[in-house]
Amino acid sequence: MIPVEREALSWALRRRLTWAMFAMLAVFALFLLRSWFLQVLSHDKYSALAQSNRVRTVVEKPERGLVFDRYGRPLVDNVPSFDLALVLDDVADLSATVEQVAGLLGLEPEPIREAARRQRSTIPYLPVTVRKNLTLRQVADVEWAHIPGVVVLAETERHHIYGEMAAHLLGYVGEITERQLADPAYAGVLPGTRVGQYGVERSFDRQLRGVPGRRRIEVDAKGFEVRELGREPPTLGNDLYLTIDVEVQKAAEEALGDRRGAVVALDPKSGEVLALVSRPAFDAEAISRGISPEDWRRITADPGRPLLNRVVQGAYPPGSIFKVAVASAIMETLPEPYTYFCTGQHPFMGRTYRDWKVQGHGRIDLFRAIVESCDVFFYEYGDRLGIDTIADYASRFGFGARTGIDLAGENSGTLPSTQWKEETKGEIWYPGETLSAAIGQGYVTATPLQIAAFMAAVANDGKRFVPSVRLGLWDHATDRFIADVPRALSPAAVSPGTIRTLQTALKAVVGSPHGTGTAARSRVTTIAGKTGTAQVVALADDTLHRPDLEDVPVRLRDHAWFAAYAPTDDPRIAVAVLVEHGGHGGGVAGPVARQVIEAFMAAEKTRPGRGTLPEYLASLRTTANGYAP
Image (cartoon, rainbow, N blue to C red; front, top):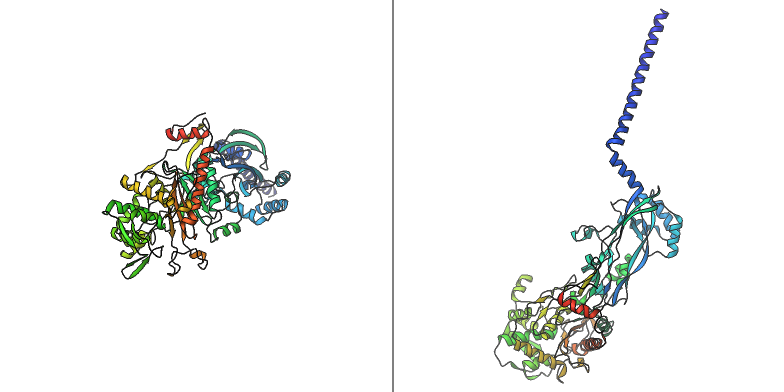
């Protein structure tokens, strides 16, 4: 029995050994199969992954194009800046890394942590900027610490050479928003990129921002660069040449001062904007560099609304300036003679409409009604015309429609009619409302830009152009200047005789002893213009049309308007000035317009001569063929 038992035991052992051997062979076969799968079938995939751990493609941001005035004088340039960034793919512990960096630089960790969360990208190894404008000492500390995933980026920041001057025109840049990233217009722009958010920085962002470059680098196990393997340099953004003249812009800024309001000057023969001022202003450079949430809330909550570009976005009753458009309707549609007796009051349907001149103007004709700005005359003739005829002729000069300027957010103003009121208010038009509209009050509103464009059209014999702020672009890819060409609009459909009468009357507004615009009279040139005093609220009879009285709160005083052009025999500049709650237009806004016009005339005498940038730009603007040096 013992040999049999031994034989059975030996057989069981051999069977177990056999199964163990088969198991080992199966495991070995699986290892071989897995190795074959990884090294043969998946070779390309894992080779690429291995390579990406060693070799990376780093995006190089392009330098943003510069901004110049119409004579090549720089307005916005770039200055170097060092930014702290995190490569999140190389950061093992974000919280620990943030604490280490914050302690190293003496910063609060939470803003850094929040910036990293906000900008987290799905793009591998894309640096996320968490702190801008490091000092040289901070740069040295970061480089010396050699923290994995922490890098210093050499960037550029926008620098506004003249400070807050032309802030609403130049605008600012800021980090691209989620909405912009989803917009096809920003296709290819990486998260965290700074793009134009306001002014010309926004309007011409695509041209200014350039094209990113690429660098292929080899990195070590901690993600630090070892060497550069290849490079495609970024394409510099195009330089932007604006239509404004620095000297005229300075004069407009100084003339308006710290008062709330707007100044805009145009070339009547092209629509080019020579100056654009809105007050109060803001520090566009500070916003471009990045301000705290508290500072941003302070700006947006400011009751003066500094971010409002009053030139294109502010809609105000135009006051007596609108009488010029009404006068064109009178001459085009009603029979002569255009006369009326002004007693200073105009009874109408149980209500008395008063003139600014309490004793009245006496027997007055259309010419004198414009020169002396007689309200009663336009009450009477506005009633004869009717609101729809007034709206028809005012629209021929651009009222009630956007001008089409190359700036975002333009307001169309309001040009009321019977149809407009029915559609917007669901009400019928009342005859008394026509009287208010005839003197530029009631529902009528316009932007300072519309007023300037209107005055330019009158100065230019009815010819109209789309206002523009861009003169052209210098394309660095082709090294050529690409000039813009003025865009003509349909002329104001009124007769030449009507235009000539308006021009003569506007000249007398300033030049005649009885004109309301004598404060704008100049010894340098002849100025034609029109005053406007736009009522903010209806005051008691004893203060009506006397908004400069000390007992009237500033917020209730009338807006002061003045629109003008010069020289009268060859108009080369048209200006509109609005001073919010300034009182009488002639005495307050008129001198501002005069200073702007005189600065323009003085600058004309000192501009560079032949063979310089102005001459090239003038010829390019005519031919639009470009110029290659």
